[in-house]
Image (cartoon, rainbow, N blue to C red; front, side, top):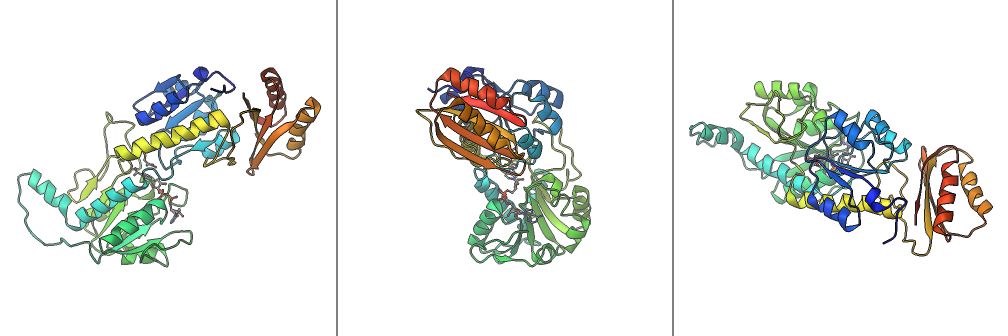
Length: 411
Ligand SMILES: NC(=O)C1=CN([C@@H]2O[C@H](COP(=O)(O)OP(=O)(O)OC[C@H]3O[C@@H](n4cnc5c(N)ncnc54)[C@H](O)[C@@H]3O)[C@@H](O)[C@H]2O)C=CC1
Ligand SMILES: O=C(O)C(=O)COP(=O)(O)O
């Protein structure tokens, strides 16, 4: 097995939030044995201690890698989000530090879509209230307020990977699908775009949210938007807790304007399963509450474990950054005959000629060179035929160039 710049057993992989065993297996299979595994997200002070000597960090949606936390991570080479959302990482700071962030953009899409469809049927049939009544020893047999989903209007806000899957499944049940997105989107099946968010809110019997957490989506569903929804309409949120004003939702559920909701994500979520859950929605019979489990199926978690761990291993072993969310993307071939030098730098004028100077002074042949840049960062990969010792010397020269963020050698 080819060596990376450090012996693989010296590369510390820190895995948090109980990522799937498939991730551990993937790292071990690739020769990474120094793995620290935690079932939960760590409190910030512990996180700072654990990340200080970590080279690779794997998290899910609970761990916040803020600028302050990343500042402690002096050896970090890459971050893996074992989920879809990457809003929990300060991706801009990570990029400025030369640290690519990877995720699994599709692995739990289907799991979220299935949950949303199930909840839509349950809400329209008033099952949450009837279920609660039975648990209290009551018997509320009645068709009043219960409907089929067939022919009802589902309004999808955010028509991306999950939103489109939800739309396809909903149409197979005979629902009429409308959607709103800030980008022009190809309609799947008979789905139709709504002219605006307001128009969607006015027309839909059930509104389901599938936008990422961004400054624009923060509180995008507040009291005004809830009031624009049809009287008796329902809301499903399995996107991010920051998207909905939860107090305004509680008020509109109490006054009956919104007749039911299914909420999987919350503005503040417990760090782990032992911590208490507090929400103004607790105790409402017409609300399905779930503990952020939209993507929590065994199939999804196992696939995510393999997908994200493989991306991290590939980057660590080979330098490829394909599908990094914050970083210039380079897909690299193997380098069986060459030593590979990786140089990550601030994207400032003149730096490429300084890099090339190192090689022209060394008078060696370059077998391959790859370059990608973003406005902030440049990523150059150079394959050279030379000895291990010489490759290390070249790496040291590259590291000494001003505005270098990271320099590594893969033997
Ligand atoms: N509850 C859970 O366990 C899970 C939650 N999620 C959440 O679902 C979100 C969506 O996931 P995907 O569909 O895979 O993402 P995606 O990126 O494929 O789709 C998001 C869509 O939202 C649109 N969008 C962005 N800002 C918008 C705005 N202001 N107004 C309207 N549309 C806007 C985008 O153009 C895009 O089409 C993730 O970012 C994540 O936060 C994802 C997986 C599991
Ligand atoms: O994939 C996502 O974005 C999710 O929200 C799922 O997060 P989780 O891995 O369950 O903490």
